[in-house]
Image 1: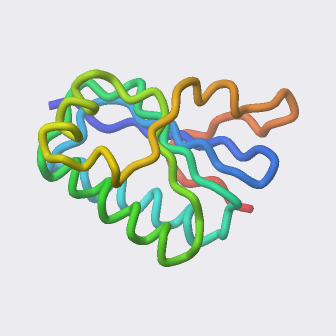
Image 2: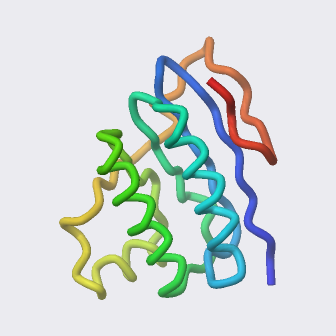
Image 3: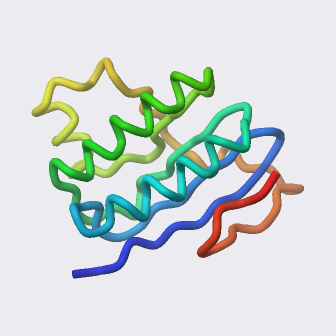
Length: 125
């Protein structure tokens, strides 16, 4: 099993979280803890870049649902970016297409003056 790799970048009030590896029962807590912390710093928007996801199961999808609810409760837009086919297929199979805002090209949301990506602890505002 591969570990989940997480990094975040803060730019213009928004945070882009890059996620890579397998999102499953074993790694779900890592993603939830990381993103919950970032949501609690009250960013203007949180973008989860899923381009590096190689596997996702029902518990991984459940994590995304929980995070979406937390973001909604805070009034913070949560977007999924560059979701690979494995993620899009699971969202479609579970009829959750209307539940998520999925965008392309999270890299376009970054700016030259953005702080470099950090691995490990979430970014502090």
